[in-house]
Length: 94
Picture 1 (tube, one colour):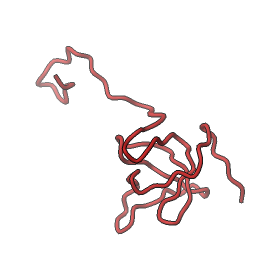
Picture 2 (picture 1 turned 30 degrees about the vertical axis):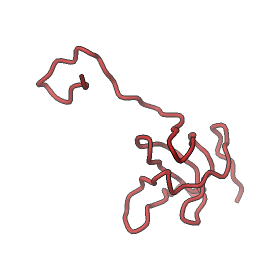
Picture 3 (picture 1 turned 90 degrees about the horizontal axis):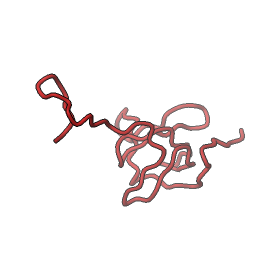
């Protein structure tokens, strides 16, 4: 039984959605928070996940990378190349 989304069903299961995801594993590989990645010729760091297939990526100047041909900040992990794993540290120099 799925957790309820409204008042029609009592929440007897106490099912909750997972929060604060530290890493995601899918067919594209394993990605962790603050991994250094490359997408569409730009380098950034993963700052959050949306499900198992999408991520939010910020550049060194604190701007989110945007998907081509749209204004969406959800980047598909299948099109991202991981450069390095940073153990939850963002390291860069200007």
